[in-house]
Length: 101
Image 1 (cartoon, rainbow, N blue to C red):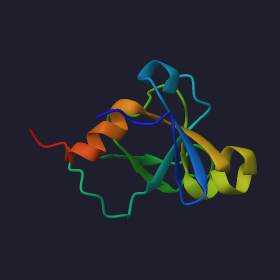
Image 2 (cartoon, rainbow, N blue to C red):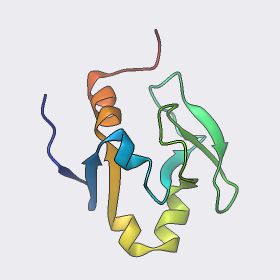
Image 3 (cartoon, one colour):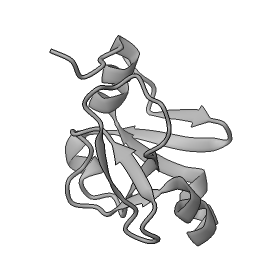
């Protein structure tokens, strides 16, 4: 399945990029660690900005700081409107990859 270069998710433009390009991101936007997700392999940590509990997938970019969505929305409205996501990550979600082997 060929994904488009950009998708709109609730008013936020998400540009789909390679894993290498995702590593160059200024931050990784994460959901609260209390959110229920279908993934068994989630990694729990804390927001680099405020210390809230957050979670992300193990294949999220390693270098950029992990930041909660609330901090992103409060910090920079341009960043909150345009984000990037790894094509491989989006493919795994569309396949229903729960992280279980």
